[in-house]
Length: 137
Image 1 (spheres, rainbow, N blue to C red):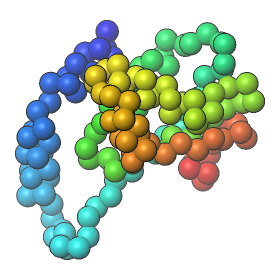
Image 2 (cartoon, one colour):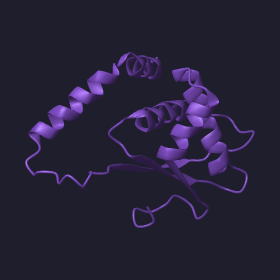
Image 3 (cartoon, rainbow, N blue to C red):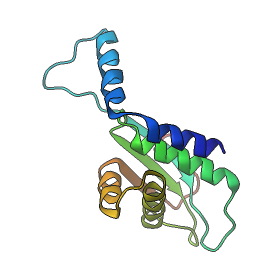
Image 4 (cartoon, rainbow, N blue to C red):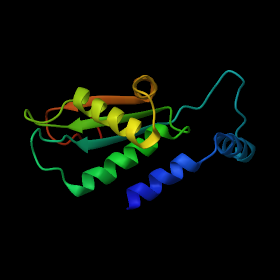
């Protein structure tokens, strides 16, 4: 229910609202931005890989919805996911496909639109050594 509410909210946001938010942030900034420098913001997290053929934990859907919201957030230039996986778990390629499917389902995007967005914003790193440390990330 929470996921659906959050995703419904994302669908309702008008594109001009992003522009207004960006203008407000720029007006409140204390340090002047140079004309040639754009601030880049990355969201970095880790996520456990889905075991192929295994049962899907209910919390996984919440995390997927949150990741999808961050991918669609215009204030993040990239979303980096360190995929904590084992040999019998999904790879980054599988994860990217699952996020593409979810993006098309939730936002009624075409496969081309979804793939373009994910190619530009989602970076996935396979981690086979257990849960990654902050140092690794």
